[in-house]
Length: 95
Image 1 (tube, rainbow, N blue to C red):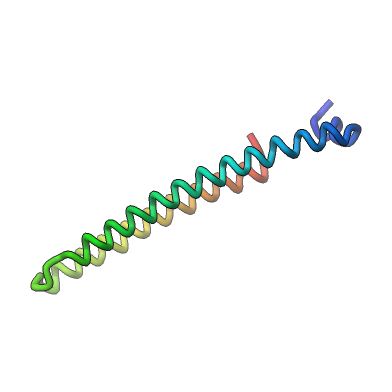
Image 2: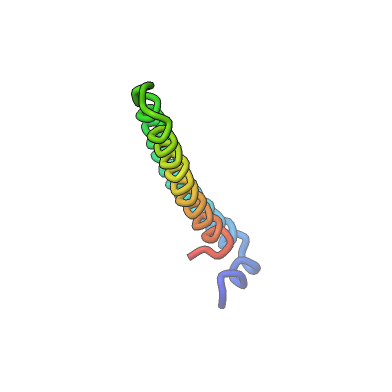
């Protein structure tokens, strides 16, 4: 008998299983929030580092730093998107 069949026959079982599912979702969302806060902190540190670069640097060096900054933002955004995708995959098809 599957959990779906059990839930159809017992409201108490349904409520208990929903509680477990929501606890799991809450835990996973909290993990994603924590990771996003870490990414945000890292991005702010990168920004602050870039803002502290000497103003007299030549244009080529500034352009390289800008490309590096955008590259890092792209990588970190991709990692954040992957993490969110993992959460939503877990919501649709829990482990």
